[in-house]
Amino acid sequence: MKLIIAIIQPNCLEAVKQALTEVEVFRLTVVDCQGFGRQKGQLGARRVPDSSVNLLRKVQLQIAVNDEFVEPTVSAVLAAAKSGQTGRIGDGKVFILPMDDCVRIRTGERGPEAI
Image (cartoon, rainbow, N blue to C red; front, side, top):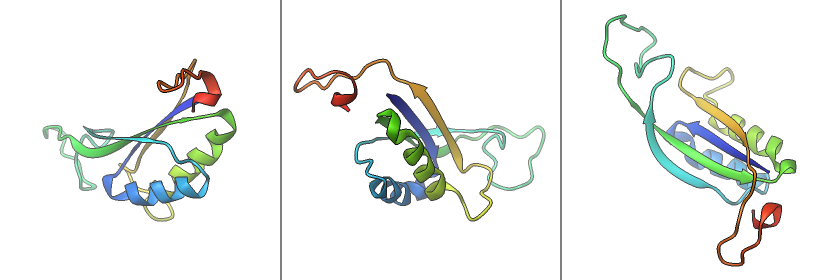
């Protein structure tokens, strides 16, 4: 089992949800967040060395999947969240983390069955 965390541009959320549906991933959590990466919150291509850091609005997707769904999930997010053919700075990141356990509250099921 893995926990996939994807940080994407808010305008890509609907496209990513559709792409996930097409690979039969139907469960996710969406969290509004803010952050900055290499561009330090600058929207333009030019960075001023002494400028202040601005936090940019992003969306975080948290997707728990069984091992066989990891690659289809990551591929769907990459395809739907990338700007154009080559992408742009600020398109986002995908993190893949091991997940030791999962428990469904309603039934008490554990592990892959609980996802």
